[in-house]
Amino acid sequence: MCIYFLQVAGIAIFAVGVWTAADKVYISDVVDNNSFEAAAYLIIIAGIIVIGVCILGFISLAKEKKILVIVYFAIWILIFLFLMVGGILAVVFRAELESGMKDAMKKTLTELYGHTSTAGQRDTTTAWNRMQHDLRCCAVDNDDWGTYKFTQWYLSQDDRLREKPFVPASCCVYDERSGAINDQDKCQYWQLGPPGNPFTQFKNTALYYQGCYEAAKNFIMDSSEAIVAVGFAFGLTLIFGMVFTVLFLRHIGNIDDEEIRRRQRSKTPNDGL
Image (cartoon, rainbow, N blue to C red; front, side):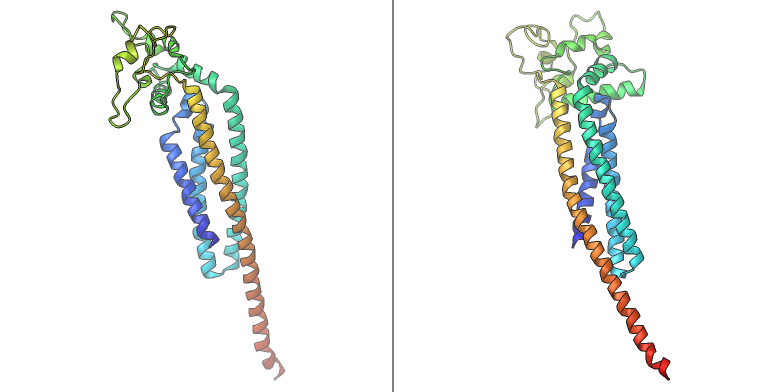
């Protein structure tokens, strides 16, 4: 029964890893830290290993081969150590996140956003746009629209234009159902209030006010807490699995001992003739 729980846990871990890698790993480009991306792929690998080991466990139970059960147990110990290392890395990443994330975000926004010379620069621009859209935020800090004036995206706009957009379209409020931006002109060009004039009391309902630092930090913290919770539950199940494996090894050992004694008893009459 324990193996079934481990199999389900392995599938769940694999699914979480795939979701993180496919949907949220772009944040690594924004915060200039590959730990989040590495963690996502680490989770995928862990899920695949768990699923494979569970299949080995089913075979071991069916065949009742002691050597297979020993290999199965040894792999679970390695996975347990792997899980501990992953937990340590998660703690380290959260510490790094607190100390350097905001500075890294300001750097990627002002130095890379809007540049198109390299694939890394283009990826960073795409990542920023996607994060602002998905997390409903703009720039780094709250009310930080003016930062975009120092980006290549703004500086490379045609000076002959009567008006330049102050922020990219990804900073604009969009309708959840239709996916369309509510009022793009007001969001990007409005000068009576933000983003053109952020020091007035006018409210721009078409523009995001929350900075992406807090939004991204909250997202990563929530994601890491969920992953840690899944890892903790998996760790407990893993311990029960190892205990079950030890008991099963003892069971196989008792069967082997009984088989040896039976063979010895069957040979005893022949030895006396």
